[in-house]
Length: 276
Ligand SMILES: NC(=O)c1ccc[n+]([C@@H]2O[C@H](COP(=O)([O-])OP(=O)(O)OC[C@H]3O[C@@H](n4cnc5c(N)ncnc54)[C@H](O)[C@@H]3O)[C@@H](O)[C@H]2O)c1
Image (tube, rainbow, N blue to C red; front, side):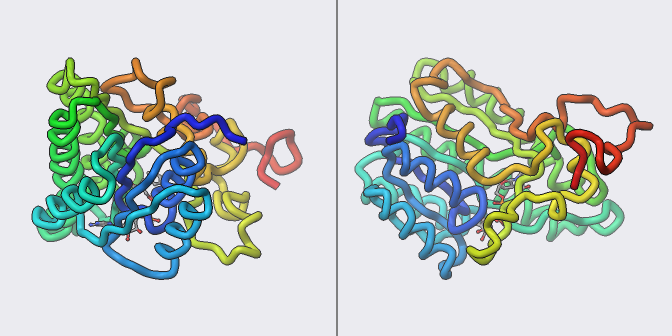
C-alpha cells in the first residue's frame, strides 16, 4: 500500500488524456487525490486514463477544453470546482505542435504555441490561484516545462521560448502569491517516452531504440517514463514539497547535469552502461 501523500486533494491536470499528463493523473490517484482529466480530444486513450483513475477508487471528472481559448479555460475551472468543490492542485501540462525551423516560423505558429502553452498556462494558473485564495486553503500550481527551457535543439525556438517563460513565470508567481499558502513551481522533463504503445510493447518503453545515441548522454542510462515526471509532481504537491517555491526541478536522468564536453562521444557498445 502506497503512502497516501495527496489524500483528499482535488487536482486538475491539463492535456491528461495520454502521455505525461495521464501518468500524473494516475500517480495522483494512487496517492489519494481526485482528479480532473482535461484535453482537446476525447478518445480511447482518455477513456483508459479515466478508467485507470477510477480503478484506484478515486473520482475522475472529464473536461473537454482547449487551454488556448479564454472561454474554454474559464469553463474548465468552473466545471472542475463545481464537480469537486474546490481546486487544490493545477498541473499545466497540455501542449500541441513543437518544432519549426527559425526561418519558417509564422505568426500563426507563434500565436498557437504561445497561446496555449504560455498564455494559456498563465491564465489557467491565475484562475486557479484566485479560486484557491477565495477558498483560503492554499494550493499548488505546477507547470510542465522542459530541458528545452535551458538548452537549444534545432527547430525549437518557439518551444524553447515558451518553456523558458514558464520557468521565469513561477518565480514571479511565488512573489505575488506570497502569504496565500500557494506554491508555484515547474518540472522540466528530459527524454520521456510518452508514446501511446500497445500493451504488449509497454515493456519496451524508453528503451535504447527509442533513445538512440541520446542514451549515452543520460547518466541514469535509461529514458524517462511519465511516472518519473509524476513523482516530482506528487512531491511538489504534497507536504514534503511544501517549502519548494518558485523553482524548476529538472527530471532528466542527469542529462543536463553533466555538462558533456563537446568532443565527448556516447559510450562504445560493450562498455559498462553503454546502450545495448
Ligand atoms: N515527452 C517528452 O519527452 C517531454 C520532454 C520535455 C517536456 N515535455 C512536456 O510534457 C508535457 C506533456 O508532453 P507529452 O509528451 O505527454 O505530450 P502528449 O502529446 O503525449 O500529450 C499532450 C496532450 O495535450 C493535449 N493538448 C494539446 N493541445 C491542447 C490544448 N490546447 N488544450 C488541451 N489539451 C491539449 C494533447 O491532445 C495531448 O493529449 C508537455 O508540456 C511537454 O512539453 C515532454
